[in-house]
Image (cartoon, rainbow, N blue to C red; front, side, top):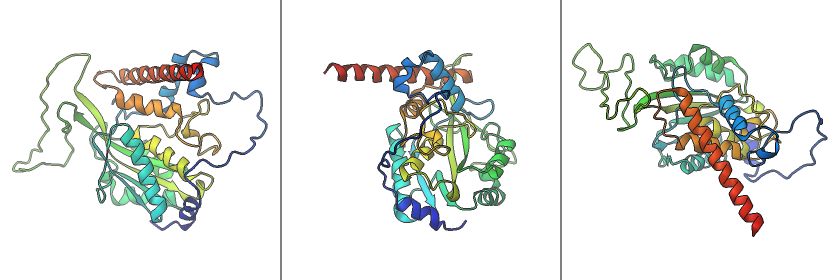
Length: 320
């Protein structure tokens, strides 16, 4: 991995505040403008349909698994950026995580989210997978998105690319509920690897105490493709794709979302209400249903509730 002076310089010269507004070019009247969550009631489409479509578009759980999220400590590490820029990314992403109930890692903590900047993103991704493959594929079912997705991570040119590993966790104890091939926890006295045991407190065909948690993640920034983004935009984009399981091919052009900034830097200055309510919905959902679709419905309900709160706050402000 090589130091990327161009990206570091760009980040260091951009204020964390929103860039001065510019006069937007004339828009094609036939192209529908992105919908802001707070304005969704004037679009002519039902609120529930819009929210459900947004969740379906962006969410990408691992095959045959429910939606995953982080638990407990959240430690961000940054490589190949100068101190000020790296610290801003760490602080901003950690702040978003803390707002969702995660604990910011202490100084010197071992990163479970590693952000790497480079001007040779594909080469770096391929080298990382080649040299530490077990960090990308544990060999246990459902812990990643599969071989096709791993090839996409290594080969597809994107301004920002990412790879997550998840684990099946006992929600009652926080302990791992899944065996990793080739791993044996002490004492390892037999050839049979230890299988984690789970005590079931409430058996049901509809509910479960086993949930999916994100364990670690790597994000690679292509320095040659993010020069038009402010450091705040870049930090919030990374926060969004890191704190949830986001489809890298999601088409969010219909929505006012930070996920659009890599294609259109004018799309958003920071995390939008669509983004924030999605993350809040994910971290507030109980995730105790067996069916994967139930996770999505829980998030949809949370976004609807947040929209109702925004409307009530707006009405109260107008009344005053």
